[in-house]
Image 1 (cartoon, rainbow, N blue to C red):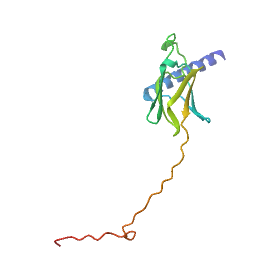
Image 2 (cartoon, rainbow, N blue to C red):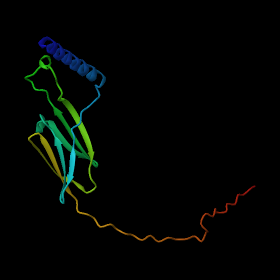
Image 3 (cartoon, one colour):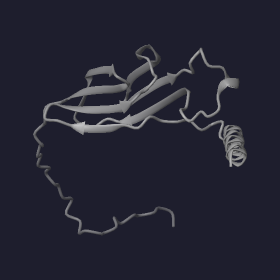
Length: 156
């Protein structure tokens, strides 16, 4: 049975390699995006994103308009070259993710921490505003609703 098991492992490796090469060829524009969980506390919004293998200097976090934009890069280890890989399921490369900020997010008050492969963004909440109620005076020109003004044409 060892010969059959060895053949099965080699066929599996060949299929994985083939699917990986074909997938990369047809999906060159495909870009992985890290997942993001958003939590709300009384004082802030918390965005948690797994970032295993990403260094803080490889992250760029900005607010553009009402969007939280996170860009980053996971680099391939320098110690392993392409010929050594037998299976590579963890993606590497550049990525960018935009997330709509909640209405009460204070874009001027954001703190970011990268610890143990988890990016935590804490965005303070703006104070709740009281809803304003404004009365609007309605004027009337004494025409009934739906009436079309009379137009006089000269020279007809």
